[in-house]
Length: 209
Length: 209
Image (cartoon, rainbow over all chains, first blue to last red; front, side):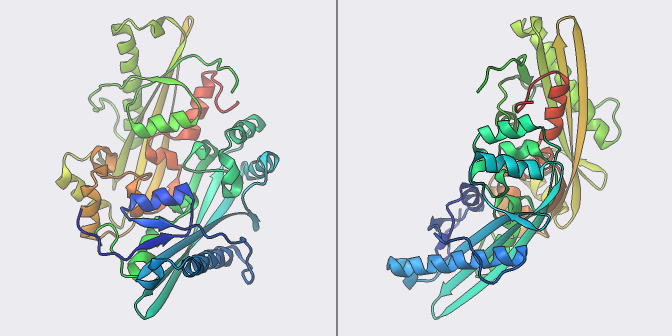
């Protein structure tokens, strides 16, 4: 490995999936979860909702760096935030409130196609300037027709509980998914090619380029 | 967890990706890799090649059980085998021979769309009868236009070395893939919904059904 000339990166998310995707890129980063209410003020449509929430998360981490008087705020750094939602027939499905809610969501997703949107927002603070870039990914996911007992078995694994739409593509939930159209990492919670492109716009070197 | 009434399963593969996908289904299984030369006698087209290789792997494990006088051969059991190939413009890309070969494969895949075929073959040995079922999955994968330095950095991680087509969708290789069309687990090496369906045809209970 060559020496890393990149400024420090702060990932505004505690999601183990996002952390793993970032680690896979060989990037070193600090984790500061953005503790925001996931409510948008302006956004109306899915692509705008995830863009706004990713922006609010990045801004919140910028505030936290100030509040904590972190040394990072005084040196060049990059904040990376993402937000993912599942949309079925125009309705946003968030994380399930409880087991019954997870069963209800999965029953609705069974045998249909839904969309997954992930917004990514980066803030690059360098000496004397702040740049911000963002992008939104959309992927389609086609669920198999599910039996009631399959949904109940899946919910019993507890995997659905902290996931938008009540499933994880990369986990046990693989058995639910017949087909996808789009970027798989976007569904997992961080569209890797788009994220790499945003980090490179901030001047970072990622995977040798 | 309720008690498992399923017969023992033998997975004819040592692939960590296939093992993880099977574990995610909550299935217990023994691993006996099928040490076959991956050469087909009859198959001409990709779907036939993976079907024949999956069949040969399952048959080989059946032989191994006999050779080793395994107790399993005397009781009902299921053998599950799979084979995955990457196809670009009708040409089959196997595992790279060395780093240079991996760079060459990834350079060819850059900016293009290729197909991934996985064949699955199950043999269900029960008292007095043998059933066999098989299926083949196909997914399309669209690679980003890659820089030479990105390819070299990726090959330097060594991830490409034991993978058909010289990449892993679920690993570091996520940064290569713009989009897929089809079943993601099929690309990883075991199409989970198809595998579940084949195991259920053998009478097994998987994920509560």
